[in-house]
Amino acid sequence: MPFMFENLEVYQKSVDLAETIINLTDTFPKGFQKIKMKWQLNDNF
Image (cartoon, rainbow, N blue to C red):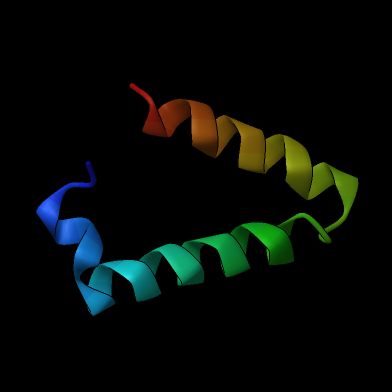
């Protein structure tokens, strides 16, 4: 059963935007990929 907020249009659009940004940054040069990985690790702390 999904959470109530998952049915909100604003939530769905924000998830779509996040996926678009991730896909876009995947096309960046390799040096940026290392920085991106560092950001992702920092977000988990």
